[in-house]
Length: 606
Ligand code: M6R
Image (cartoon, rainbow, N blue to C red; front, top):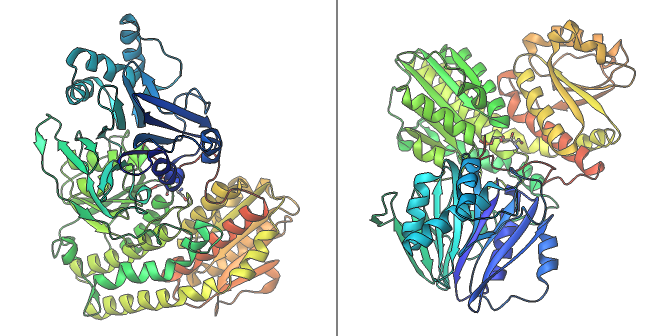
């Protein structure tokens, strides 16, 4: 939530900030702003709305500044107005903030007694005043940051300019991501790699409570006790091309098409002699041997992946799996025992609730495996074992390729755990071969893009829609419904097909669109009966099924038939069709596909 950037060097700071903010806009796009050192003063320019509004306000000026900070906002405290936009300035401190200061009201009252007056409704302006009050006392930016950290509760990544140190940018993080990067012209502070990939791949990851000072090509680090720190420079594996649209109209469209590649990149390095092997990831051999129960926690799409994981692991390895929304788990005092393990699934590796769930498991002595896409993210760093997915940067707010690779990881873990629990090698080999086969079939679903898109176009005026399915199809129904709601704004509910008649079927009237998923052979007769029940009440049914399954055309109005695979592997094909439906529904409804309203890619607040 919110993207921040800072730059000091030979380039135009204004142009660096605008470029970086364009690549960070997926983190929030309610407003944008910059603060630039111009002569002896810091100029703040900000505008409500998309980055284009800020560009317009900046006009052709401000190109001479060589040091500045910038922000793209996902509003938490205060509506998305010019005044609430960042940067915020108090006294001799100007800053941009990503995160939430939880004790801001208490700090505000205290700072008002010192004479500070606030113009915005934000917690960030309070943080600026707090740091300024510490700066007034110490005269040292570093000490001011250290003292402010003692008082700030909540999460933050700041990029800060101090009057008195022109051309210098400071940064600090706790609970929100921040990296420092360098090229031969200067240094950058940023929320995320895509912000700086156009300039450099060389970067440093800041740990909790760490502080950075950047001036030109010189970057220095301190730990939370303000002791100097020497940090390892990392070369990013992601390239700028990967973080751009590459000829596609939308990031989401590009990312949907990248799935066959992402799946291969994630799965193939984890196979040895035809079986899953995670030793190169650091997961000890026989990890699951003594595990009695697994606990999966995640949010949104990653949560729905966890539900698929539960079905796969329980079926193959016979280990009981509990799946929790991370936001609920953290406040329900879960019952955890010996010989349990946890799996946290997160594309960004920064989701606040998932990170809190991870910490809860660790506090309770439960070993945590993280499945994460963003290298060096907080969840990746804090987990006991991190299994990276290799989806590459996912920019569209709607998650697509990240889900598929997470699901692929669930197959691999299920097969691995099955081995630890004594399932015969021949069965595990055959599962692994089936996984590879389904990956090789994913391009065939992409070839059905136009057919699936034509159905989606019929949803242009839809107000409400139901996804139904049983077993794995139900987990996929939830993912399909989330995707559709998120980007097309059509109200949509996912229902277990057998549960409909316990209430929800009363919402089915003449013409109500229903998307029925029927890829599970053993459940097919039951699912078809449920489809007939809604059809009899006037629903317009799209049936998504697989070649070779005996479905009678009278059960539906339209049909999408996916390549034949065993039902266990259907999720990897099915999800692509559901993503294409959501994307095309959003396009015909004129929605902003990559940046849906009210959302942000990385949810670093509770
Ligand atoms: O980065 P994470 O995987 O932890 O994000 C979790 C959810 O916020 C995310 O999956 C969200 O639901 C997506 N926008 C859905 O497309």
